[in-house]
Amino acid sequence: MTPLLALLWASPTSAQTPSLSCKSHPLSPNWPSPSAWSTLNTTLSGRLLSPTPPGAPCHPSYPSVFSPSTCPALQTAWFTEAFHSSDPVSSYWPNFNNDSCLPDPRAPCSGRGFPAYVINATSAGDVKAGVDFARQYGVRLIVKNSGHDFVGRSSAPGALSIWVHYLRGMEEFKGGYELRGGGCKGRERVEGHVVRLGAGMQMLDVYRETGRMGRTVVGGNGRTVALGGFITGGGHSILAPRWGMAADRVVEVEVVRPDGEVVVVNECEGSELFWAVRGGGGSTFGVLTSISLLTIPSPAVTTLTFQFATTASNPSAFRAIASFVSAFPALADAGVSGYPIIFNSVPSTSDPSRLVSGVIGKLIMTDAPSNSTILGHLNPLFNSINTTYPGQFEFYTDVTSHSTFAAWYEENFDPSPVGYGSVMSSRLLDKEALTGNVTALQTALERFSAGGQATVYIVSGRGVFEAKPRGGGTAVNPGWRRAYVHATTSVTFPSLDRAARDAAVKKSNAYADGLRELAPGMGAYVNEASKYEPGNWQKTFWGDNYDRLLKLKRELDPNDVFWCQPCVGNERWQEVDDLLCRV
Ligand SMILES: Cc1cc2nc3c(=O)[nH]c(=O)nc-3n(C[C@H](O)[C@H](O)[C@H](O)COP(=O)(O)OP(=O)(O)OC[C@H]3O[C@@H](n4cnc5c(N)ncnc54)[C@H](O)[C@@H]3O)c2cc1C
Ligand SMILES: *[C@@H]1O[C@H](CO)[C@@H](O)[C@H](O)[C@H]1NC(C)=O
Ligand SMILES: *[C@@H]1O[C@H](CO)[C@@H](O)[C@H](O)[C@H]1NC(C)=O
Ligand SMILES: *[C@@H]1O[C@H](CO)[C@@H](O)[C@H](O)[C@H]1NC(C)=O
Ligand SMILES: *[C@@H]1O[C@H](CO)[C@@H](O)[C@H](O)[C@H]1NC(C)=O
Ligand SMILES: *[C@@H]1O[C@H](CO)[C@@H](O)[C@H](O)[C@H]1NC(C)=O
Ligand SMILES: *[C@@H]1O[C@H](CO)[C@@H](O)[C@H](O)[C@H]1NC(C)=O
Image 1: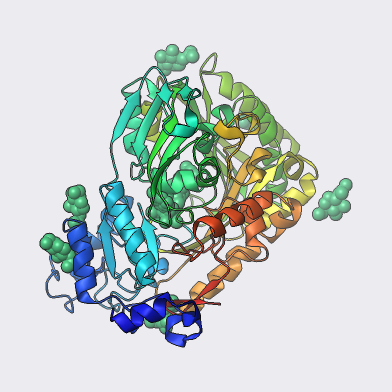
Image 2 (image 1 turned 180 degrees about the vertical axis):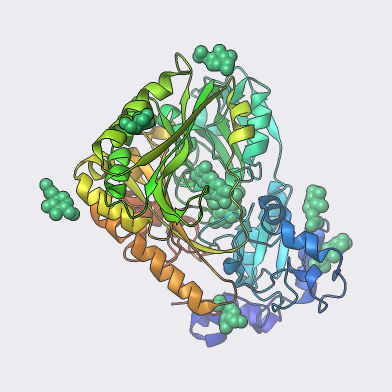
């Protein structure tokens, strides 16, 4: 950056100058000079990367990495979490990189949809250097952890990315935890078993490590879901209906703030920021580097794998499905949680020429008195479907047991493939929505699953309603405190087809209309939702917490060093093709 441009950038009127009303981009005149980047790299002891796009080994236009023998393996790895999680820039859903380098020699390949530079951060100091640089030069900043994000917040064209994947490590605090910070004098002691984890730690690692201690955490089901996005988004868990949400069990975090300060926040020191990072959204209030979590004793788990199905043309199919789903609040109150999935007019596995509808999934109970307890809760529902509704229903049930949660997880993690064009929409459902009018529920679920399938996960309940988070509250969507079910549906579409993508966005939003009407005011879970959620998305994702979050965002980040969509306080900027410009 030349001194003159630096001066312009610093002046308050610079926002009026067209080229400077956007964040700096590699093609902008105010992009930092090579020597500025090189100085940053020196500060980082060489940890600044300028990665080739992830599909490059399939493209002769990238001779340094092109390899006809590597390309086929890459094409297979593309559908796995591990690939995108270990790549510095790739997203699980390539549409969020604008499909700009697929592992297909026939597709275009450029770095255009990816960040320009990546900091391979291993310390809070590395993170701070990136935040300071982005703030100083007006460069667009993003934070990538695994790159899981269903709403595309962990990628942006021409940005500086802080890759927090290698913020790893775990410390155990067996006999209680001492909160850090002067504000905690005299009340620093937290009873319980605590682990302090790097924000790049992923679910599989955390379950394995805490499992060795006979403990576990309240966590997610995907293997590579990382703590940074999970905690900031207010993530859900199959254990939450009993133990509360993961965000409710955080005792302290270390954060690099937008002003570059590295702070440790908890209920008595920086308590407002501590409140916000537990559910207020990722890459908005700063970058979390470590998270201290209260663990729980590892429970024994009994699992019911089940399915019921009927011919899709059976007019009673969705009456049966709705009656089943309307039983979820009672099931959850009885200690059942899990991952049911509605399927709507999909080919039967035994006879693909026949279309079937029904529900499939896994339900669990923890520390149940016997292995048959769970069937005792479900059999009456299956019998009632069998006898109440006309037409033939087929049932499948299988009960297994695991003596620890870690052992359960090794066999029951979420194995969903990734790596294709996908958009999602979702809704939280409370008892009123699920039981108030089952006819209305039926219509809404049929519409919601019109694309073939929809999840109706039982991941909230009494433990979430009665949770006592440190400091008196968290920023998670208040809808969670009444919800029993988190319902999602995804629409997939072919890559490189913008019309198909736009149609998919419309479709997925429309699928959720019935549930929006059925559960007004419940909102949705920001990490698994539509990036293009219609209407007042601020209210949808944060409810009555939004105004408080916005106030903090303006105080902590007056110049919007952090920006993403859908994220608190992003209203002053908009994406214009590859640029991020003032509204
Ligand atoms: C197969 C699969 C299974 C899943 N299972 C579950 C589940 O059981 N429960 C659940 O709640 N969710 C689940 N998810 C969704 C998951 O929680 C979100 O995708 C979440 O955003 C992942 O966080 P991440 O850090 O791994 O991802 P990223 O895409 O890297 O990050 C997500 C967001 O968090 C921000 N972020 C990441 N790290 C930090 C940090 N250290 N500081 C500040 N901001 C940060 C990013 O900038 C971005 O905005 C699943 C997703 C998949 C694909
Ligand atoms: C940063 O420095 C390291 C070590 O000197 C070097 O390997 C790397 O290529 C540099 N990064 C960039 C983006 O130039
Ligand atoms: C990032 O840093 C980690 C930890 O030092 C290292 O193992 C990894 O190879 C680095 N990745 C890249 C792409 O440089
Ligand atoms: C469940 O069954 C397993 C063997 O399949 C057994 O080891 C375990 O003790 C049983 N659990 C209960 C609670 O009865
Ligand atoms: C359903 O009803 C049929 C016929 O009455 C019976 O044979 C079958 O066992 C029932 N299945 C269940 C799960 O109740
Ligand atoms: C239940 O919903 C249906 C369809 O949405 C509606 O027609 C009916 O009037 C509702 N019933 C009650 C009691 O509100
Ligand atoms: C994405 O790619 C398309 C086609 O190459 C291009 O027109 C568009 O500007 C790119 N960027 C965004 C943000 O859509």
